[in-house]
Length: 274
Image 1 (cartoon, rainbow, N blue to C red):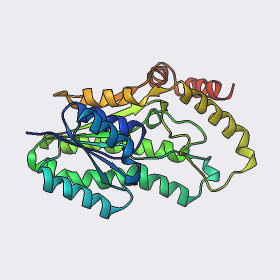
Image 2 (cartoon, helix red, strand yellow):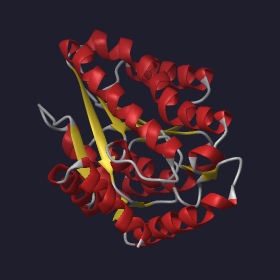
Image 3 (cartoon, rainbow, N blue to C red):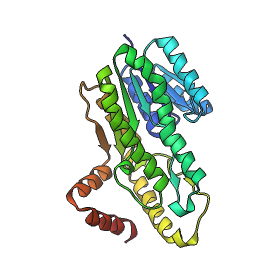
């Protein structure tokens, strides 16, 4: 039976590469995105390579678009084998500069939007007694950094959500996988959002952190490497709970294991501010 995959946030970056990678593995792939006007590139590649890729409008913040897209997929294919929750954005701003609305919007997309899509596909996956849900977290879901507390918190929440899901869904044959990219070569920094305020007292810290992240992004891991990791993980009978991706992610996580909390905090300060 033809395998079916859904990927959110497929217009660029990790979602774009993952949609193509799964299609190349034989999945009938639904590349979903908020703005389907951005679909020309992925459809052009799919046509050239004769891949089964269909673009659907899906805005994780809008319940009606989620339901419409998922219902179409179920009506057309009668099954869903893989869901990759990739849609999200990067909020920059220290906590004091971030309004409650800023933080709510960050969680609405990065966390509650993910839940909307998961809840829409779960009845189908349960009835077929199989399926794999891949939640794109981040190195920032395991390690906190300054200047991005909204983003960090949303990704920490994704980690906890995913761990709970593993307990709840495994009895129904549904697998949950967490992907933890480090800094990836995507447009996340060009598409970032800034907090409502910008207090001068945090300017020096913010400038240093953003300069460091921008430099890291220029040497970052290609989005295709994340996509390849996802393809390998979903093909396994018993995938691991989480997969860090990128040398920076692995380096930071290993360093955190080897140090006390205070030692690691001092290490991060040195890396970011020296």
